[in-house]
Length: 270
Image (tube, rainbow, N blue to C red):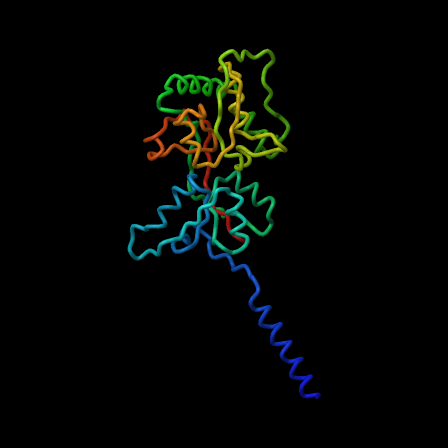
C-alpha cells in the first residue's frame, strides 16, 4: 500500500513537471537590428508602408539570404499582441504609434536603429485635380502660419503635449459643403478614438484644411487597405491616415504635397 502511495505521488510530480514544461513560454527576442530581419517572422499592419517595405524580405534578391514570413494584421494593435505572445519576432510600424504601444506595454521596446524614413501625404482621386490644388494651397498656408507645427506639438511634444489643441476660428464659412475624409482610426497619434470621437494629428489637420477651404469635415473610419478604393469610388473625398506616397499607389491615386516626415521603426520584445 505504501509503495502504491509512493507511486501515485511520484506520478503526480512527473505529470505536473510535464505540464509546466508545456506552458506557453514567450521566446527570447532574436531581432536586435535590421540585419536580423531575414528569416524572421515580421508583423505589419495590412496595406501600410511597413507592409510594403517588409514585403522585400519575403523574396530576397540574394539566394543565400533566408526568406522572412510576413504576418499581416488589420490593426497595429493586433500585431503588437501577437508579438507579446511570441507568435512573431517583431513589428514594423510608424514611430509615433510605436511609442504609444511601447508606453502601454513595458515588455516591449523600439530598436534604436531606424528602419525607413518616409513622408506622409493626403490621397485624392485622379479625377479631382481641382481639390488637389486647393488642398496644396491650404497646406502651404498652414505650414507658413505655424498651424501644422502647433497641431503636431499638441500630440507628440515632450513639453507641449495636450497644451495647444487646435480650435476652428469663429464664424468659419462652410458654404462649400462637406468634405469626407477616409481614415483608419487605429494609428495613434495620427488618428485614434477618444470615447466616440476620432482625434489626432490627421484629424486636426483635416479640420484646419476644411476651415481654410470652407467645408464641413466628415470622418469615415475603415480598414487601411480600403481607403484608396473609397477615394477612387467617390465614397470619400480624401484619404488621410499616415499614408506614404509610393509608385504603386500613384498608379491609382493622386497625392497632395507632403505634410510631415515620419520614421518606420521595429518593435521587439525586451
